[in-house]
Length: 401
Ligand SMILES: Cc1cc2nc3c(=O)[nH]c(=O)nc-3n(C[C@H](O)[C@H](O)[C@H](O)COP(=O)(O)OP(=O)(O)OC[C@H]3O[C@@H](n4cnc5c(N)ncnc54)[C@H](O)[C@@H]3O)c2cc1C
Image 1 (cartoon, protein in one colour):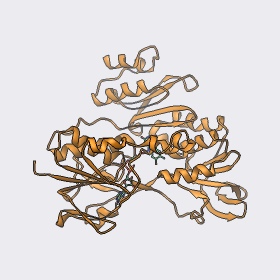
Image 2 (cartoon, rainbow, N blue to C red):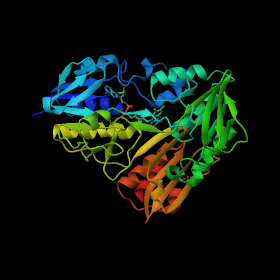
Image 3 (spheres, rainbow, N blue to C red):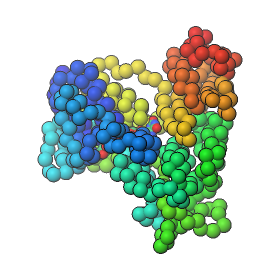
Image 4 (cartoon, rainbow, N blue to C red):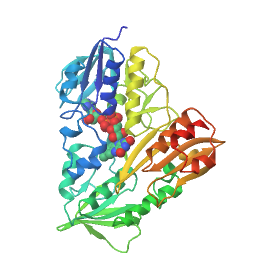
C-alpha cells in the first residue's frame, strides 16, 4: 500500500485504538501518536476509582510503556499539534516542528462543556475531563464538604455517587425531572435517579442561574429555590464540546463534529477522524468509550484498504452507587418495553421492542442480558416478549428464539 506514515493526533482510546488496530491489521509503515498529555490514559476511571484515589495515573494508562516500542508506535507526548498541513503532507507541532504524514488521523477528543452561567469561571467550579481535573476535584471532595453537582446525566451521576462515597454532602441538580429517560427508558431512568436519594444524595429539579464566590464558599442560585445555597465546591457535568479547531482551520467539513464517512474519512481524503469529535452525517455523535475504540478499528481498516469490522449496536456502561449499568441500541426508537426481573431485585433489564424486534436494552447488574440484546439487535432475531421477561431463561438462550 502507498500509505507509509500515519500521524495520529490525540492519545485517547480512539487514537491508541487506531494505532493498535493498524498493527493488528498488519500495517508496516510508521505510526506516530502525538498527545498533549504525559502519556495516554483512560478516561472512564476519572469519575470512578481514579477520583476516589484507589487507582493512580499509571494504573489507568491505556497501554504499558513497553507497548509503544513493541508495536513500533512512536509516542510524541506533552506536545500539541497546532496545525494540519495537508498540502505539505505534514502536521505542525507547538514548537514549530513539522512531522511528515501521508495520512493524519484526528483523535482529539473533547473538552468539558462550561455553560455561560454567571460566576462559572470561579476556581470552586470544577469540570471533569482530564486527570488534572480529577486531581483538583479530589482535593475538594473532602469528608463533610458540601458539593453541588450540576447535571444528572452519566458523568454527573457518577461524580455524585463517588462524592458521597468520599463522605461529602451532595446536592445533584438537573432541570430534567428524569435524566437519561430517552437512553434507558423512563421507568429504569426514574428508578436510577431515585437511587441517589436512597444513597444520601439530594436531587433537585432546577437550573442554575448564577454562582457567586463568598469568603466561605460559593453560592448557587437555582431557578426553583427560595434563596441562595452555599457550597464548598461545584462540579459541572453538563456534557462535552468536541475539539474540532484543527479540522476547521484546515478547511475540513465540520458540523457539530468533524464530518466523516462510514470509513472515518473526512472531507479531505488524507485526513480521518475518530472518537468523540467525529460524526457521521445524519447521525448523532457517540460520546462513549467503545464507540471511540471502534472508530479507531474502522479508520485502521480504511488505511489498510481492508474490510471494516462488522457494525454493531452502540453500547456503553456507567456505574453509580455500586450498581453497574449497561445499555445498547436506541431506547427512544422503541414502541414497547419489557422488564426482566424487578427494579428492587438484585438485577434487572429492560428491553425496547419495535415491530417484533429488539431495538435497545438497558440493565442494572445484568450485563449478560445486554450482551444477548446486542446480538438480537445485530442479527435482527425476532423477539419473544414472554421469554425476554422471564429471568429463568438464560440470556444466551434468548438467541435461540
Ligand atoms: C470522567 C469521564 C467518565 C467517563 N465514563 C465513561 C463510562 O463509564 N463509559 C463509557 O462508555 N464512556 C465513558 N466516558 C466517555 C469516554 O471516556 C470517551 O468517549 C472517550 O474517552 C473518548 O475517547 P477519545 O479518544 O475520542 O477522546 P479523549 O479521551 O478525549 O482523548 C483525546 C486526546 O487527544 C489529546 N489532544 C487533543 N487535541 C490535541 C492536539 N491538538 N494535539 C495533541 N493531542 C491532542 C487530548 O489531550 C486527549 O488525550 C467517560 C468520560 C469521562 C470524561
